[in-house]
Image 1: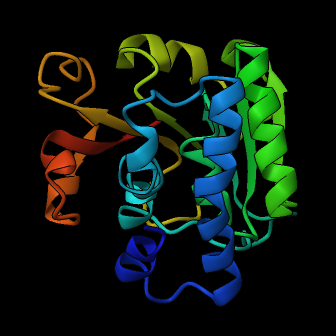
Image 2 (image 1 turned 180 degrees about the horizontal axis):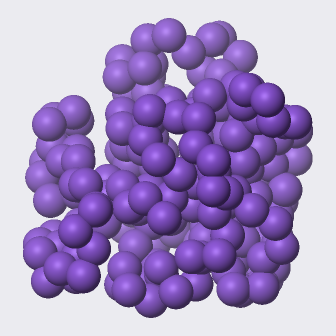
Length: 213
């Protein structure tokens, strides 16, 4: 199943493909102990979790280094759960720093174990709430942890001012369904339809929302 990643992202290295290939067994093993992925979804891990997370890559590729700035891109993953979208993105962008946070400690335990098993040196984790996170980031990513107005309140002070990507610094949010009402207060939001990129029926209503902050 991990070959689906190679199909959509043919430029990944053998090392990255190997890391992606390990995810299936790692999550099956951990999910048996701590339920971080719904039972019906675990068999669809690569489509519904890994590829879905990588939908963000189809909108923006994180740059390795920032001009006139120490260190490269910094990304905060809020409500990461079992490590999505943070872990697939960290595999895809080994020179980008990812900070994964979740309010549920046992989920962070699973994330830590997966990060260690994959040898991901660009990931840090935190058990806590988004509002309490220290530091500033270029982008905040998440998968539908709450509605956009609440999410913006959580993270509005966490974003660096100066942008050096094709998109302005802010939120990259994986959401589904009709977002007209939810995004009414955010005229600067841009919606990218994942069904335009991935052919699986799962993606018919799935989107990436970019909101500059």
